[in-house]
Amino acid sequence: MLPLSVLDLSFVTSGSTPAAALANTLDLSRHADALGFTRYWVAEHHNLPSIASSAPEIMIGQIAAVTKDIRVGSGGVMLPNHAPLMVAERFKTLEALFPGRIDLGLGRAPGTDPVTTYALRQRQEEQGHDDFLERLQELLLWETREFPETHPFRRVEVMPSGVPLPPIWLLGSSDYSAHLSARLGMGFAFAHHFANHDAADAMLSYRSGFTPSRWREKPHAILGVAAICADTDEEAERIASGADLNFVRRMRGEFGPLPSPEEALTYPYTPAERETIRRNRARLFVGAPDTVMPRLLALAEATKADELMVTSAIHDHEARKRSYELLAKAFGIPARS
Image (tube, rainbow, N blue to C red; front, side):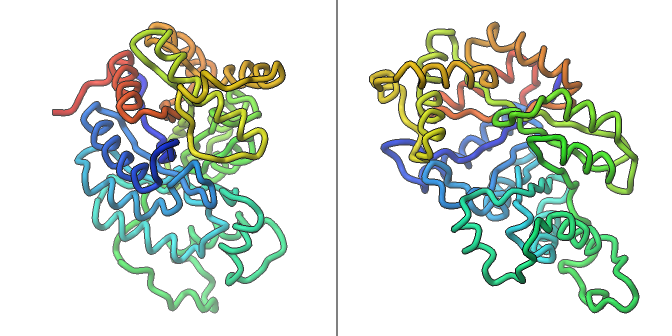
């Protein structure tokens, strides 16, 4: 049985509000916990009217508080936006409150546009280059306490003390994080749902290059996929039409709320836009369980994924819950009492 997990971007839908999107995230997390999903991860995005998730640490605490067994984590914290000490403190706090249930997924992209990136980082020391590796090294040193003897940080105690950092996962949509997480001996999650890089290449490279470490003894590769499931192929296609229109608009630089199927089905697509949708459907799994299962299993086999993490851009909240319910049943995930 291949474990299933959830990546929730807290989609803001047309006719609704960001606050409602966050409330839906809490409701969906309870649903996923009862269905038997392994993890529930939330993202960090800024200045995107389509995504309400900008503070994953806060949402992780809220989700963990309303669920019982499912692991809760970040997919991910965009490390260049944060001081490593703050990340260590926040996630040690979460681990202290919910021991054994927290994941720390880290990304190296800003999760936003250049102006918002500047606003996020303007009070930080300007490095003038990609300093993800330096920040990651510092974060790990806060955990190992292996700063050099003369380093001033040796005198700083990360609070709460005596609490380990949760398991660290490096996220990526290319082979960069695959090689880095393998070399460091960490978990790896690949974003097939928006990547242009070949998923099998990244995932197999991670597995073949993995070096056991204090962080993880064996490789564990999570494959992030976009899937929309319904009771029939026809209903799934209707629901997915909103995601299709959303993708077309994103390609034009428009990041508004997720449109409804009604909006999408009356939209006057150009031939070029229909071709854009057709190409994107190669990485979007749409249909009834019997339709999507063979494709998902084939990709999981090709990438040797240890786990599938599903994100679903569905306008109607109940339809989104039903999509995850059908996938859990199709994969034979035992529900939790």
